[in-house]
Image 1 (cartoon, rainbow, N blue to C red):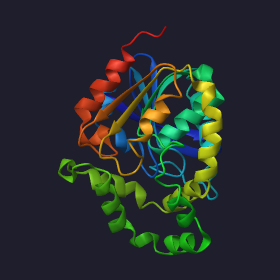
Image 2 (image 1 turned 45 degrees about the vertical axis):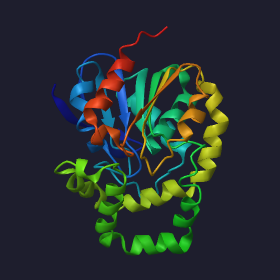
Image 3 (image 1 turned 180 degrees about the vertical axis):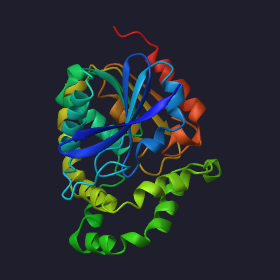
Length: 278
């Protein structure tokens, strides 16, 4: 199934996305400092059953870098809904990973009538302690200043962090590190990331308060048992938010199951999407 590169103008900035396939709309939302490249193994399989849209949110990937990015969860969610307006999608299934999973949940709370189902891959959530202490440190003025000063030299650190996101780094396929680095090296990417972590804890409190509003959306939670970024232990607490929610844990897998075990991941997503909506 052919996947094509497209562009949309959102809030005055060019936003890149990949699309293809046929069937009900399915929007794929990457994690922090990821981009549509994250879905390179999933897109061909999912496009057999859905019309897929894999976005590069403004500030990352090959989308424009706004000079003063607005990075709260609510602002991201509102931006995502405006993107759907721009491409003429009234409602869709929404698949988000990590920080993108949190954006997906927030978007659903703002417009539950537009989200048919949620597929959340290790989504950032109020019950995972990972990041709660680190985010205020990273976003503090002296640390932010330091990171922005040394941004051109952060490629090696970025590669090391990416390796930690795998349960087994031997599963990293050729071209993965280069693919992520190509977009990470575009000036302004780190500024976007620091903007996200600056409101991290406030965003999680905002999300927790809003979650009861999407309790009736059918949801699938997917996690790797060896996830070091978002605690797998938070899956069961998050599961209780939803009236109709399944959880699948991939044994021995890290934070990126769609890259580490793509065949298992695609099968789980397609089985969920094949279920009839009541």
